Amino acid sequence: MANPVTISDLEARWRPLSSAENDVAGSLLSDAWEILLARVPSLNDRLVTGSLSQGLVVAAVTAMVLRVLRNPEGKRMESIDDYSWTRDNAVSAGLLYASDDELRLLSGVRRGAFSIAPGF
View 1 (tube, rainbow, N blue to C red):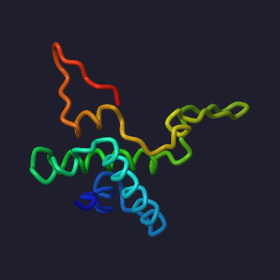
View 2: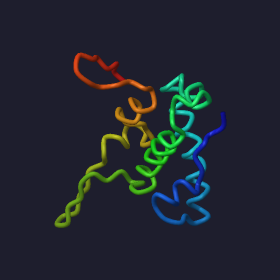
View 3: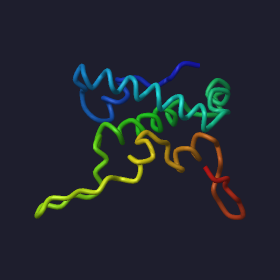
View 4: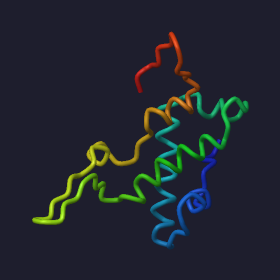
């Protein structure tokens, strides 16, 4: 299955993108989709069979990409006097990532009493 997430999905969750941003966003959408396919091997099958909502996939992929687009420099902290800023740890890990919660949602792992969730 092809990536179900489009530039329009990003714009609906954020704002209209410029043509330069469109190019970057398109690449990031493709990268995010590939990351999820690698991290959740059953993703395609679950989408095709309907056991996973396409809306959840759209939400996860757009969240991954918007983390990068909203904060491309990865600033986590910034000071004014004698200016300094701190880079977010996610940036040093490669910026584009799926959070543990997103991976759990997409993999179908349930959290609850007496359950052990695998590490992602």
